Length: 317
Image (cartoon, rainbow, N blue to C red; front, side):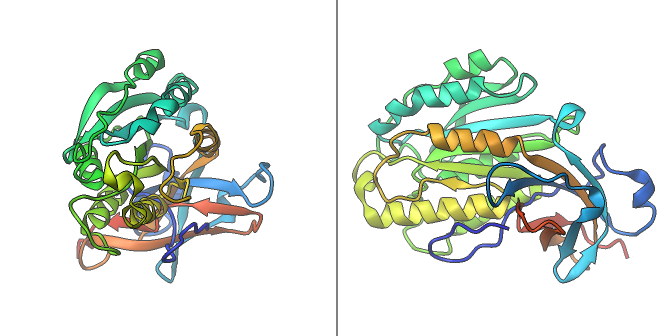
């Protein structure tokens, strides 16, 4: 597993839906007890780009300290490639984002034909969609506009994400639900340091909904756009959110804007192409809640990026 935290170590990525997905192996499910949990796992080579072929019997899952049966492991390709990708842009972003709009549009049009893309702007704790989920990538790219660009247009990107997830219905035909947030990560509702309750709430909701969150830093308009203190914690909160939900946060370089989003969007495209759908049987507890999980393999040449907790229902007993 991979850690890219500058302030506090964070365990990494995975997501959960407490229902049996259509790609799980029913015969194997009958061999052990537990609740089927669906995880999206990104596999990343430690050196170079080549990945070894990894079979289901070479993947291991631990819930806390206990090993749990793996009942499904398929690459997110072909019949299992279903992906819904929400691109959420902070409407309080500064003028520097204007130079990145073409990179964002190009990234949208590079998605696989069946990928559903939505574009929205985070405003005052909500998301205003300029394009609902669609496979018309040209239309989605066209809906990308300049941010409003004034401080206060977005009170908290984390409450916006929570609201977006809660309005996002699950679809069994689309096993992957992922978000790219473009924001400074600055939370105007919370002026403290770690932990931020709004960040924690958005992580909880993303993990329980099985949503992977990626993020790219871009400065806010106004004073916060050049406040080292606020941008420093904004970037750390974004890194925490992405790492704990199974994604990655790009550009941890201080308050200045990235020269180009293109390298980060290329990396994201590569990660989307190296994802697997994993199912394991989780052990239910006395109370429903999140449980820590860890995915490992006999292969030491790769990292597994996955959410560090999954939601498991209570035991029926």
